[in-house]
Structure formats: structure tokens, C-alpha cells
Length: 75
Image 1 (cartoon, helix red, strand yellow):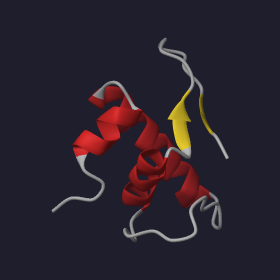
Image 2 (cartoon, helix red, strand yellow):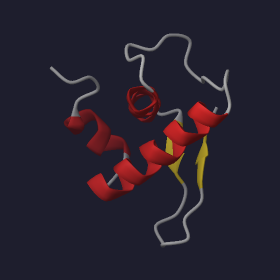
Image 3 (cartoon, rainbow, N blue to C red):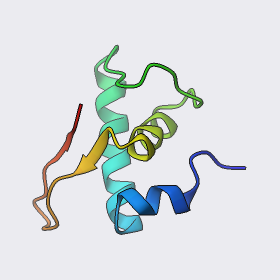
Image 4 (cartoon, rainbow, N blue to C red):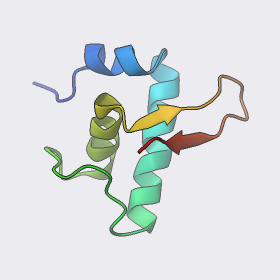
């Protein structure tokens, strides 16, 4: 079973495309900068899984809807 579930993630982010875009950008950021974890404990050991867990926890959100959207986290 996948964690976090797609239903849980869809409550936080409105579209699958936006979710994939946000998670990939955050995963790349975690890969390039070691030690940028925002949760105390992760279930996944891969960066994309960690990014999705941050979305499910509400720590990572999408700021705007247009193509030039900037993604940032809320702590």
C-alpha cells in the first residue's frame, strides 16, 4: 500500500499535475541540499516519498495556480 495515499494528497493539492510538479521540485531541492528535512520522521527513504509526506502533513504547499508558480513551504 502506498503512503501517503493519493486521496490524502488530493485534499492538500488540487490536481495531480501540480502535485507531481511540487514533489519533484522539492525532491530535487532535498537531493541538492543535504539536511533540509522538515519533518521529524519520514516513512520513505527516497526523496520523492519524503516530499509527498511533507505535502500530506501540510508542511509543503503550492502558492499560486499560474504556470510561473513559485512553490514554498509553510513551517
